[in-house]
Length: 219
Image 1: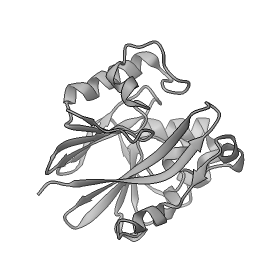
Image 2: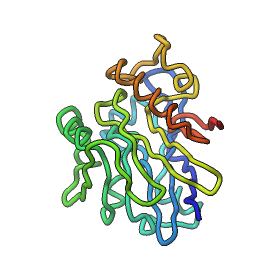
Image 3: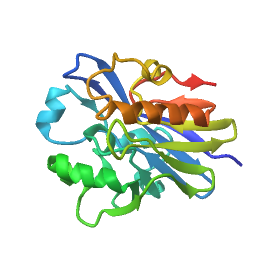
Image 4: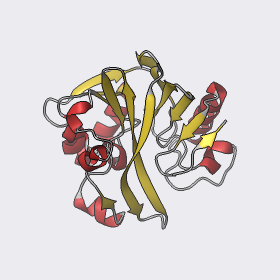
């Protein structure tokens, strides 16, 4: 039996870039448990104000699926920006799977976020590149947006799904990695970013899901 992916609407950003973006997390259910990919928005109040965040609790979003935070046994952070790890502390019982380079980057660059992702007794499972976490659930290292960004690949009954975090903000960026018209923040390293988008394309997932777009690309 394949795994199942369900999208959570966790927030709306109407912020400093002038765009109106959703924030999505994803629940991956499997026999006997569930994983959560990204936890939504949290962080210093100034950041929330600057981005004019319309936030909701991840617990409320899970409740719409008939779930509670206690049903989530592991969390995968695609990366540690405030709109992807801001409610990690809701899952203090869970292990957090992320790239080692991303944790090092965030500790150095975003100490203001420490209380949201680096709280006392946070249990990190640090990865060094691609890894299979469970049968049918794996991560693909995709540096470029940040140095430690990763995507999540899921084998479902309806084919493969890629949960790509901020590897590409929108289908437009995903489809055309050669573009020089990148929005602010899309790529901290444009060369690595382009290579990572091509790497996802090479995997050829049946569906591509975005954090900041409701559109789903179907192969």
